[in-house]
Length: 176
Image 1 (cartoon, helix red, strand yellow):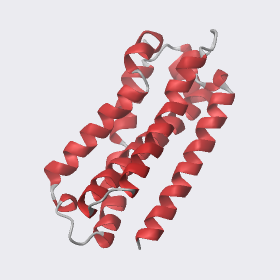
Image 2 (cartoon, one colour):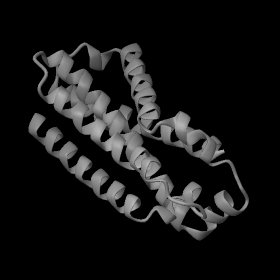
Image 3 (cartoon, one colour):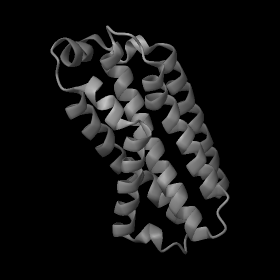
Image 4 (cartoon, one colour):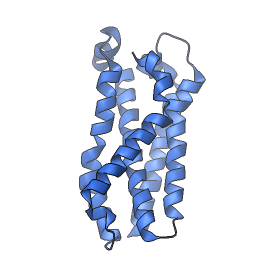
């Protein structure tokens, strides 16, 4: 069973890498970069850097010496990957679907005020109702997977790590 979860995550990272690579190849579809010069550093921080951190987190969990530490790191990785996926999908939709683009770009609807909460809330049901039960099947003895406060703490850590990885403080003036 751990092999199935690991293979699923490998595919997940592959899909995230393809999406991030595609979006970084076409920065004009990223709504808050439209109409200006494309700063390569911002594109790398938004799309590439989070995927690199994700790979490091997953490897760290895979190489953990204790099973409990492995569970924590893999849970963090799944949450982090879910946040990246939702972010990439939202950026793609806002940049390519005309009705959505019109609402966010032409009417100057607050991208930051809308997308950031969505990308941080949408992964919660996926991780809570799909990933955590599967991890419980694999790691039956794990106390971490049965502790809601610890799960919430890991989610908060994943969110903070994601916001730091995209350089939110650097990107903030562009998004507003």
